[in-house]
Length: 337
Image (cartoon, rainbow, N blue to C red):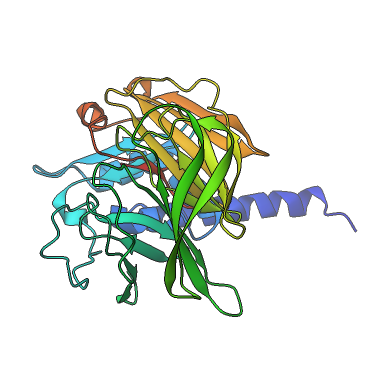
């Protein structure tokens, strides 16, 4: 039997009362906890993303000297908090790694895949690699990689298979030629955890490409059995890890601004889908990969967003060299620098 008008009205009233109660509770908790609560369910996420919630939150948590709370948006209807003061520094650390104190470069994470990190003490001299689990703090060192020319700009990809009957991983090192001419054949070094050895082989690209990484680009992403690299001309190289071959090359996204000065770029998995993002000055653009083609999903000028209540001057610090852009693993409207 269909619900009558009375039941529908009572259900609607219950939802209102329930939402009011939730708002009263959630706007009083610390900001970090409020952000985490967005992952509880879609209803909580929608409540916490409303302007009304932000008004309640800001009135209950007035800004104090020395602490900045920034509200930013990933699209015109969403609001997210970016907390950048020391109180919200994460407890995450890789200080359990044996080379942590002596690392020549703090940016020693070369890749990530299904909960594991690929690390290297000195990215300029990629001989020794470590695989670690940042949660359990377990780690393993790998056999020394084959020596290469010191001027080679190595691109590394990491693929972890946790769901196989015999879990394992592969590392793929692309050794591009020193010249910048387009070529079809590339040497790659492959480490396979099942054999415990490095092997070198030649792979062929479907068409000649120039594999150049003159600036800081996002690390390779392991998605649907393939490693994806963003290279200098904004094409995406798709490498089949199982068969050790370059499957195809995805053309650059339409609308991507080719400006290497201070732009930030990012490859990210979000909700099981694959995205590329660009922050050009204060314009954020996000594309989704669909059947080897890019589809634009977001384009917003952060500087013009009226919903940014605090920290507008913070936007000017976003586009700095040697940074990457990452999307939240479950929410496309949240990004990290």
